[in-house]
Length: 176
Image: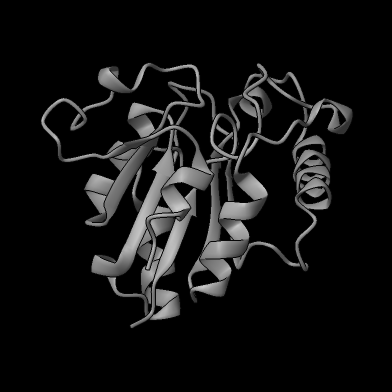
């Protein structure tokens, strides 16, 4: 069984800072490094899937985002590359977009390219867009309390379809 985790960045692995463009501002959230190490040890492929509307708004560049991601990977302290693939959606809301969450396109393409079992894959994030991308792609979703959106504001949480965890480490601890 080929399985994977699709991971939001801001509010999931690092502290969500509005339009983060400076690598010195990267702060890991509790459980991020340990959770990723556990998922890897269990055989999960890891894919970073992040909306970065600051690029589309002209507030920072794709190169800034790459530097922030590199700093995050450095702080995680895990063997490189940490992620098997990265999708940075640079569009601002309202701009034409192929990959901006809740679009499932990156997840669907990755499932096909890596021969992944959708029933064994998760999208983990802190927003309705993260959960929406998972639902549209036909994979499971988990919501975290570490972001700016209250979990009960995320579709599926109140109905029990989307489990909620204190942080990524708590989610990863449930993986088998």
